Image (cartoon, rainbow, N blue to C red; front, side):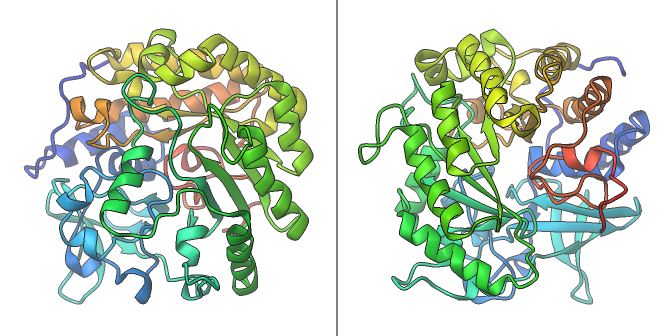
Length: 454
């Protein structure tokens, strides 16, 4: 491992060539991490800007627009994004070629008008990704899927009810658009789910708070009919935490009702996944009984002190130790391989309370990986995007250093190898040039399986 660098506040968005030098230094310093992942992590942590030539025409165009499927994943509010708020950017982009000879790399779009990375068309109208003013890759945009061109009987769009991400692989069903952890004393300090709800409503956009089961089934029927290539392979049921009830249902029954209805209507069509709190074993069993195949009880951040500070609602209602016990218990229901808790990579280094060196942050995160992987459970992670309306986003607009994210990929793969684990199910194929998981590079950084085709 390389020696640690200081947090150094940190790597500002400049166009003087410094970013290029940093990226190339890390590519050289960590040859086991795919070069594609170095650029992808930098785009995810710091965002990218778009020329108007690279924006979509919303649902009336030929490019799949950004759906804002749960969080904003932007470095500015809608009023601050200018043209990108009126003509949405694409949901994702795909990078290929350029001076680094990039293999096909799918990247979730996080808009930052101040980023040194920009998507723009050249004189021939061909889109490229530019860093510090130099073209570093070709850019492909996701085509508008046929199912997005159809509406539900009540006029709602499929994109609003059942958007797809990961280049069409995953149907993302945020059936509860807000979180009952509310306010400064309960909300996770990096999460903007509640603000994202408010900003879309304020902008007059359709943004259904609780999606009726019947609407979800109708949208899925449209996807199933028009996705003739069967590109969509999995669905995720998720939304905000439920600390009391919605419509008389607790969290397990609320999210479970959708899984039960989907599995009864479309048996075996998709891999069913649920992102929920770490629930007691009896509640987890209900998910399994309803037909869910994969359970994501996200643990967010490993360090005890940071969990208590950054996830105050989860600490208050459940507590870190109980959360971890419940994750291990859920493996007895689903099997360890099918329990895949997420953590938010980068908040370990968030001021004012986070680790001040990359060494310390990586050591802490790896301790968490070893704890779960020693039980056969494979966590995954989302690269932290410091949304500006969140407490941690306000105090850490540049996020964590890129070096942290690259060393995490190195440590993640090494820990998996230590415990003899392979890439988790429900994420598509692993390997650089093959992966479709778009909100972090962990799948890009794992070895490709011989049986996976491009």
